[in-house]
Length: 482
Image 1 (cartoon, rainbow, N blue to C red):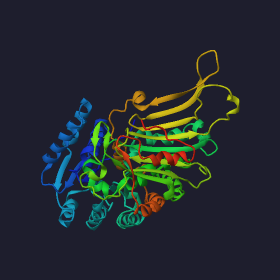
Image 2: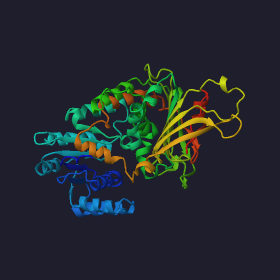
Image 3: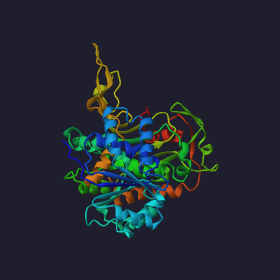
Image 4: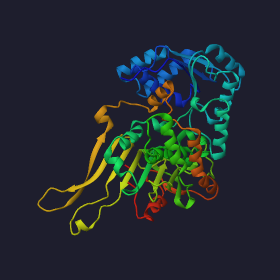
């Protein structure tokens, strides 16, 4: 039985924005449905739009209904209980009067969730500090900061310094929503809770690791943001490196937040700066992806006609540790690809071929696939004898699907993150040194990619040809995006 989170007020800056509607609000409905929010839990939305409590509630309810969040009776009851706890305050984030009003209104435990553009992160934390709203005299005060956390190493260090000048590291929760997904959290349990995987999780048995986050969607209405960001900053320097850390970290001696984050930080600091020659950057051209027509990236709304921004990245990454010496990690992410597919592939070394000389059939290397989305689960590929009078081999999969085994419902991934925010568990949140280690690893690419053009690929394909060539030069192939 999971305990209820303690009573607190969740102050959401940017309460009328897309992040609040699409991810935070549904997660809160699910937490309320499951009885995990205290009777004293309240929400205070803050944004520039003029309006009152009813405006925010009606706007959220409209989106939740249209998005299918309230189809189940339990979710309807969850929203009904949550709606009465929501209030709204309109205000300019640059106006000290807003924070004076919040000081008079707030007491006890408070979480400040910065669901805003990154340009507001520093100024908002400064304003909260100036108003005394981060003092923990009568209850905890925590700050949740969404990505992107900086745009390069220098800006990440500057933002860390600015936030840590106002709050302790224990008060700062840097959100990476990938870490809220059930399968991602299960990586540690699958690794450290099973003797089978623990025994072979090293360079003696593993040939290489693939981490793929493929999307069918194009940039859509996010052209202005994406053109200034690109796939490297948007995905590789946070999501993909966080998945890498979960796979590559050393076993913690305790499952508490700081011990786990210490191990993640150590492995991220051991990532060798990525060489430009070990990467491919691509940009989608016109085509069809996800059943929708896609225009050329540079024809998208709010994208510069001469843009050099990449929508696809493939990279070969090395980790300088005893466990992973000689084992390459191949990272791949892109938009407007053939399928939505996020997964980690652990491909093991081949068995000696001599015993099978002259025997027909498939004998691919064993591989463990950790499927993150859309079908969360674990799949282990092994070789067996095909039925019949002759010895012929075949490849089969031992398959586990979360939804079939446990019934996941429709979680956003934010349920766990918000619950952990309330109870103060920082296990799934990034620490300052982890963020800076990721930016250090990609720094050579940011500098090198100021020149040159990405390689074009047709929307609806698996990416640029150079991605396959990156693997082929090492005698390896990507697992198919499917």
